[in-house]
Length: 144
Image (cartoon, rainbow, N blue to C red):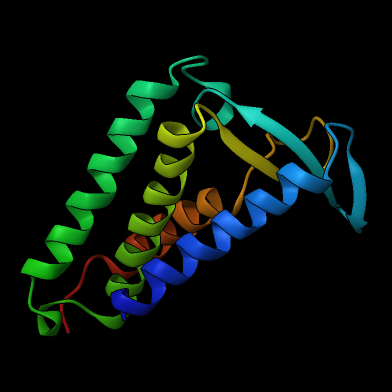
């Protein structure tokens, strides 16, 4: 499962970020009810924390993503529930997707906006981290 989820999420994340960089403006553009597309260069972390700390955040994101992948490789898949495997895969993919941006570009490209000013603009990697964390809490990291 991680062998499919991690590269798929990373590739889709990078495709969407490249698309956003080439086509979107920093002015919110309505896409669907309650969803806007807005191009943002984020040099910090979630919610604007650690603004301008791109390099250390990039290396931390890379380390976290690689640690999760190493854990998945070292842990017998029979010891983790399918939900925990999916959760950890999403967490690793999200961390690595944003690490690619931080280390390679010097900033993270964000583009999903649930309403100007209502919530910080985010991206697929961010969504993968949040969904992965929620699934991990739900699974309790339970073994099969």
